[in-house]
Amino acid sequence: MRAQHDRILINLSLEMNGIAKISFCGGARLMPARNLYDRELVFDEAEFCARRHGQARLEIDRRAILISVAPESPAVCDDCERVADRLTFALGDRHICRRCARESAR
Image 1 (cartoon, rainbow, N blue to C red):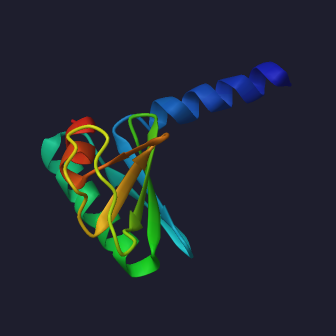
Image 2: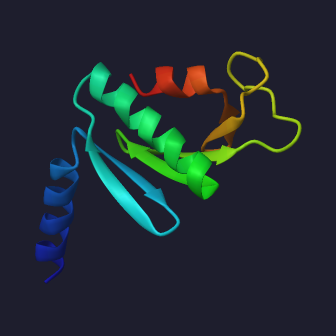
């Protein structure tokens, strides 16, 4: 039984290769993320969902980015040290700006 469960998980991870998942309050969306153009569309949609629902979780390339509306005083990007836009991107314990988040997914 355990071996069958492991095989299902492996197959699921292989199927998710090249696909991004955007989760938000009330739903989720799967989108292709096979090339740079696809990834730009994924980020545009994830940002739209974050603005509409307050936050969204983007899973791409086995990494998760939490996108949320910035507070009154946006944080400084941990990578480039610029002040973040109206949206903040949390990648693990790092808070990064929009530009660095998009570059990290290339």
